[in-house]
Picture 1 (tube, one colour):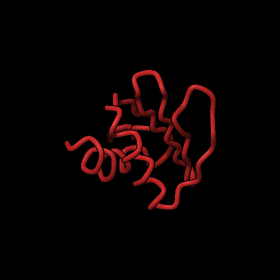
Picture 2: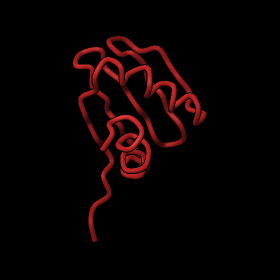
Picture 3: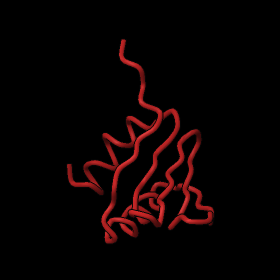
Length: 79
């Protein structure tokens, strides 16, 4: 049985940062201001951190795999 992915990091382009924020806001994520981040968003046991350096996204938590497969890759990364 494969081990579930609980952490995922990927580089973003500058235009993808506000797009991701918009997608998360539309899905009811809660936002917090954090140092060195464009934003930090969370919902349930899932957190999405977008760092200024890169920029890059770090997704962590129980629903990481589904979030990456069904939201991040098709809607933001275009994969």
